[in-house]
Image (tube, rainbow, N blue to C red; front, side):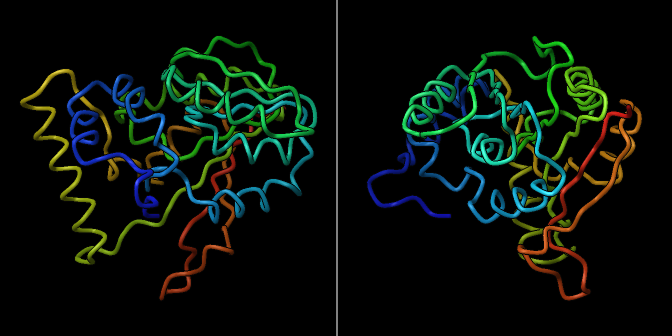
Length: 245
């Protein structure tokens, strides 16, 4: 998704963001974040909503690493009572909060500044979602992150997030992702503070094991609206992890 001319961040702004910490970088980017290609596309959000709707309705929902609130739009459609967005960027939360005021007839909505690795909630949610955030966590941090999400779900609660099929080795997307991750590793080796954003470390096999280790029961549901690859497999799946009753 390209940014409309004059609305997206300048190249200089993106460079400043990349040389900042993750938190500071998103604070700086927040006013124009929704005009970048980093925002989860409407097609993905709509497809996830379509799969979640038959599993609900849910009472309360949590958007983990909510940013400006793209996933909150999903929660508004499938939750009846209360929705909460949590993020550690005050700037991103401010944008999300301001835009949510213009949305009529929504469940009670809260915006909470906190680190997803230490969620400030008890087991009060029936559904948790997350979109596009997992690249900001190192693989060693994911088990703790998943354990935190497990701890804030009620028994029977679900944790859902989309995961894209890996790029075919040797394909253009494969080399693009490899180049990006390599550049980030070089940047973090020579510059402080680090900016953690790696696209190739979130592998389904590893994630499945980590979710099971956190106490979830895990299933995959194809996001059919997003199409299939040449071999017939889905381009994107929804991971649905359930806290057992």
